[in-house]
Image 1 (cartoon, one colour):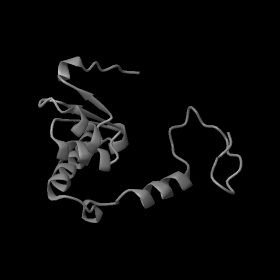
Image 2 (tube, one colour):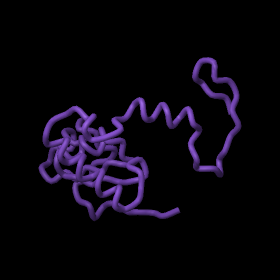
Image 3 (cartoon, one colour):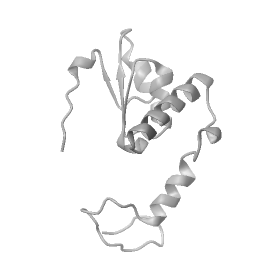
Image 4 (spheres, helix red, strand yellow):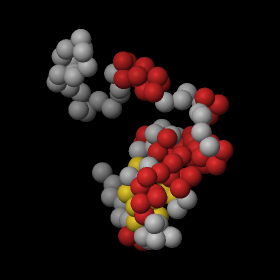
Length: 119
């Protein structure tokens, strides 16, 4: 597999190995805050992000493997900024565009419309 980054060249494909390449881990740490104290944002978003990160920690999953389901724009934005794997916005007000603009990957009018499939 060819790495598109300049000077990186070829690296072996590892479809069955979920472990990230060391350079990917370094890049991830550079792009995402390492702690909540490093996060800069609105107080409401910061508060929601703190809750989401703690929930992921208690479940023993990394945020990028977790789903956030929110009906508040601050919660959607927190899930998006926190790098969560999927952010589902539940539109209870008839304004789905606000949730999309806040960072929702998917917006539904009712959570009963969401189907979860396991691999």
